Amino acid sequence: MNKQLLPTLLLALTMTLPGCASFERNQGVENAWRDPSVAAPVIGQTTESDIIKALGPPSQVIGLGDQTVFYYLMEHREGKAGIFLIYNWVKEDTIYDRAIFFFDQNGVLREYGFSKEKIEPPR
Image (cartoon, rainbow, N blue to C red; front, side, top):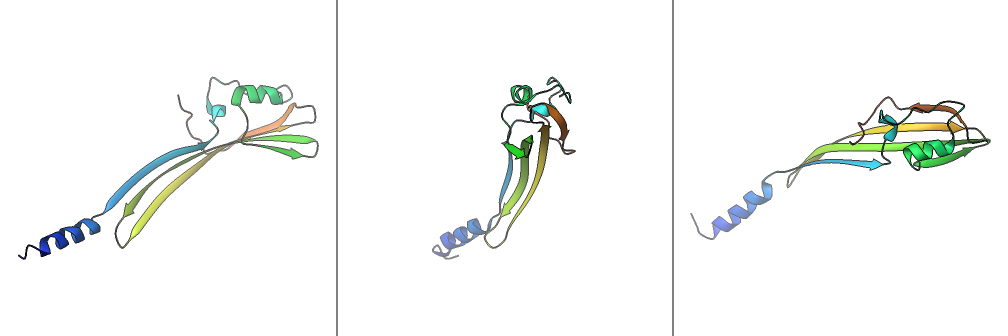
């Protein structure tokens, strides 16, 4: 084998070897509404300040006429990827864990709900 051909062959082999990646990340607010140690809100009694004390600031505050809405969102993404010289692929799954609270003009809870999808809160 020609000695000058060997470096070229090694370079070509290195460039065509696959590269793999795995990733996971959380984004948004901590989903404390899933934590069993956090007291459940009570319609007609819990206030905006109670929710903020228990869960922290919401992802969004929305004004709807005489109502205020607190929207909390936690996003979890995980995936895998294959990186090749000619062909690449990425597979990613995303779960959205949400909580939404509706308050009247006096700041008292009127309605709330959580998404069916859930992400276990960090311990």
